[in-house]
Each structure stands twice: as structure tokens, then as C-alpha cells.
Length: 128
Image 1: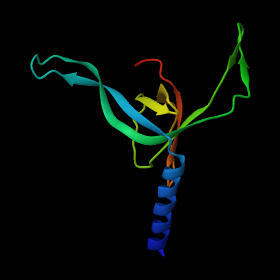
Image 2: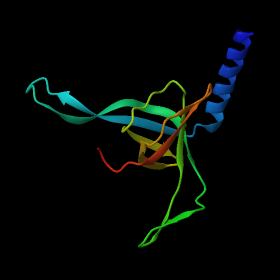
Image 3: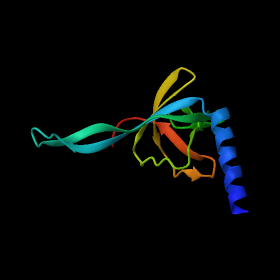
């Protein structure tokens, strides 16, 4: 019985990825790297995952947050990708979908399902 369920999940995942994954993402981490020649350490951007199939989903903009100076519109962004991928907090996630490329960062704990995971994103504003 377990084998049948696993086969069904694998088929569902394959179908989900074939239908929904329209984008590609690259994950970059800001790491301390030591130069072999000079032995000097410094922070560098290191690509840890490249050209990973994914999908961006945008929540409908329906609300505005009123502040003392102006109304600010908000938009929710979610990244859908394979469930086994691990993206560290603070990583830069560059997504290209529908000929548009943008940089994001993970803003929430992933919701992981047998067929995919969902990660809430924010626009990347720089390394912390």
C-alpha cells in the first residue's frame, strides 16, 4: 500500500512540475571565503543552486497599508519549487519567469508538501 501511495505522489509531483513550473531560480548565499593565494578572508556571493525549475505566484493586490505620510500597496509573492531544496534564510533568490528577472529573499518558513514547497518571498534589498 505504501508503495502505491509513493508512486502516486511521484506521478503527482511530475505532473505538477510539468504544468506549473514556468521559471528558473538561482540561489546565492553571502559567505566568508578565503583567497587561496593571499589567505585573506572576505565576504563573497556564492551560487549554491542554479537554474532550478520553479514558479512565482503573486497574490492579488487588494489592500493598502495607511501610514502617516502615504498609503503603501502590498503584494504577496510565493515561490514554488521541489520539496527537497533547502534555501537558507537570508539567501538571495533570483527568479526569471515570463521574461522578467527579479531578486528576492526568503521571508518565511517553507511549507513543505509531498509534491512541492511554498516559500514566502520579499524583494531583496541587500545583504544584512
